[in-house]
Amino acid sequence: MKKHIVFVLIFIAGVGSVAQNKNIIDEIIATVGNRIVTRSDLEYALQGFKYSSGFMTMEDEEQLRCDILEQLLFQKLLVDQAELDSIVITDAQINERIDYNLRYQITQIGGDAKKLEQYYGKSIAEIKADSKEQMRDEYLSEEMQKKLTSDLNIINQEVKDYFNSIPMDSIPLIPVEYEIAQIVKKPVISDAEKIAIKQNLENIRDRVLRGENFSTFARMYSEDPGSALKGGEIGFTNRGDLYPEFEAAAYNLKTGEISSVVETEAGYHIIKMLERRGERINVAHILIKPKPSPEAMLDAKNFLDSIYNLMKTTHLPFDSAALLYSDDPGKTNGGMIVNPFTASYSFQEEHLNQYDKTILYVIEDMIPGDYTRTISMITENGNQAYRILYLKAKRAEHKANLIDDYEKIKNAATEEKKQKTLIQWAKNKTKYTHVKINPEFYNCMFVKEWEIKH
Image (cartoon, rainbow, N blue to C red; front, side, top):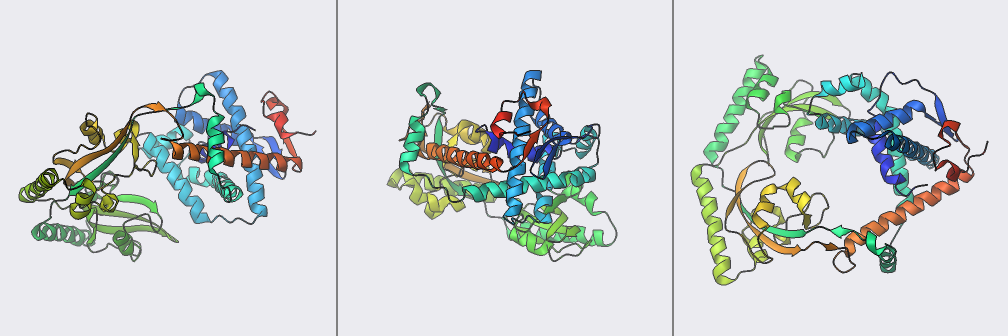
């Protein structure tokens, strides 16, 4: 059983469950205990992978077909054990995962759901219905993997042994990494601006209540780029997915009702309840963001200019200045910017390009300890502000080593230990689980490892 089996399995199940084509003729190609793997299971997953990854050769496709079949067999083992252990997955969890996968695929093709329907020859509703059983298996297999590896610990010697087992010519090259901090100043929004926005939204609400179309107003006035073109519709969400103030107002609405004006970090909203399914809601909203006046923008810039001069003249440490003067929540950590892709303070160039390209342009010629003058920025909520950037550290491209890259190596060693644990568990389970595979797949190298008995 290949080491990559665990990681690819989740991807195949998640994407492949959506990739279904009516033209596939179904038949059983493998059994694992009382569970079956059908040709459609395999082909659907293969289609999903090919759809996401693009062109591949016939040889690559045949190898991928073998890999996916092994992963599906492994999933059936996990699901069987999950049910024996009474692991429960709710319909709400399954529906949430299906909706997430659909949103991902729709985003991948430019945001047009019709294209996805055309590609698979099914409506979104049909895709959701056909995905449910596969998604349930995916969820159960994930939870079972977590249960089987939850008690794993890794000690320092195991990390060293893992690293020392890597051939010298295979030690990965770590790209240039940066650690960056910031002091942020957000311009003050005037009371007059806030009052004007609230009044505007109340006027829109009154007009909708008198019979005008909410979706039309959302397309015309909403400043939420993700929903405006869809008439303000957000799509189904769960508790905890939205701003607390937004969520509190939304969950108090009945179908068709429209909220009063709600203030969140993003701005001001009115919300319309479209549909509720238990604890999941689908709402539309109109967002208008307050704009700072030119005077407020200038005041914010001048404030940061004064902080820059203060640090230069008094040698006030950057982290102290951030704690005292920054409007950013990260000020409690010295203003350090967290990499959202790794949950660490370290950024590689590719992550900076995805997170905020302007940062890379500014810091690439700086040396550690330097900080910029005041520069403009756009916050995560799309609002204007100013900041001073500080380059705390810059590590040159290098081969991984235990001193500079211990946490990365520890994470890799931990994942390998998890995989070995799962693979050994699967080998043990197949000893007392009947497994049968269609002879057409005997060319797949993994078959003999599953100890097939006929």
